[in-house]
Image (cartoon, rainbow, N blue to C red; front, side):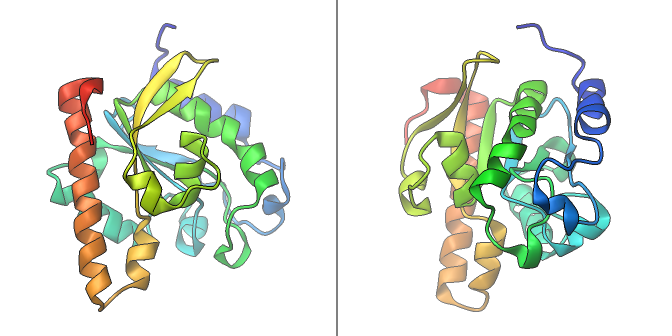
Length: 208
């Protein structure tokens, strides 16, 4: 399938397809739709679960404390935030930052699949269990098991097949602040991102 101009197509998706979305009840409490941002031709695409309170206020993904940590992780593997594309499964903040619900994911996921098709990354980094479950098609698998597997995002409609590297969401790491677990988890995330970059450099033949 021929690739469209990704930057213009993403703008069309945001303003003409999504618009002031009312497809689920989250529109009643959100301030802004948080679409996504970054290089529309990025090799690496990061996908989280949903916006938080600061993201909801600023209409940008990963700009609160978790965003600061994500940016730090990206820099640790030699990239800049401007070189990647960042999005979420949900485009609206769930009240009190609760977990996404099934009907919300069902309503919003088609837009994420279109974002992936337009960016056409060489690898997807799934941040947290909800993104990992959706993109791998394993809805009940823990992050520990997701991290140790080899996964591919498959979409028959767009004929895409993209390696997925699941890793811990920055918010999970922040919850462990000041503990030994925090340092251990940070090292795991950096290792996962290094693995993602090897997919970019070496292609689909990478093993765990």
